[in-house]
Amino acid sequence: MGLAVLLAGCSASGSGGSGTPPGAQPGYGDYQATADGLHATWDAIAFTDPASLPLGGGATFNGVIGLRIGTAAGERRMNGALSLGVQFSNASLTGSASAFSDQNGATLTGSLAITNGVLDRAANPASGYTFSANMDGKITGPGDSFTITSDLSGDFRGAGYGAITGAVAGSAISNSGTGYLFGSFIATR
Image 1 (tube, rainbow, N blue to C red):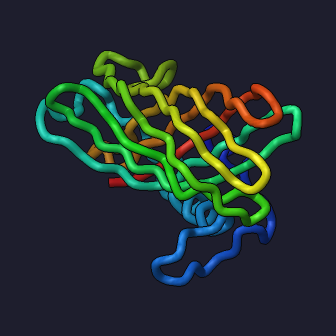
Image 2 (cartoon, rainbow, N blue to C red):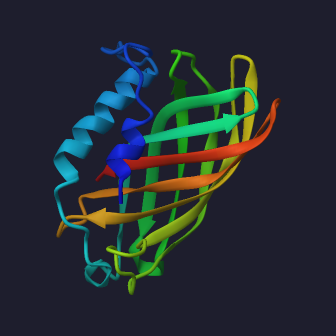
């Protein structure tokens, strides 16, 4: 579904640093390196058949989300941490995206809540998504703040549903007006 291409489009050379000290928020480049490593492992692994997902229990996925926000002021790219909890017993999911850093190395505050998530056990991952949710909130950084309204959609990967990958689309209202938001994510159990 072109997810590697979408997240790769969020990369920048050298900005955001690498080798984050313990306890410090990762930079843009740190997140990108993590996402690249996860994609190298999981992109070749087939989507999980949604009908084979457990009927009980749950799983937590942690990884990286990359966003591109375009407004009249230009495009801003940011990477952040993604945490998503899936409850198989009621086919729901919730989570958050936070700790964002942009392509210029700036740290952004705020978080995006992932709510109203649902699983579609009858989905065909080749043509549609296995899960979808709302992802909304506010992120603030140097010179601007973004009120985000978006949808997050994705699929599980592997026979043991060891990872999730997907896309984000929506809008962002900033000091410069309303603009687009696109992105992608990858996370593992």
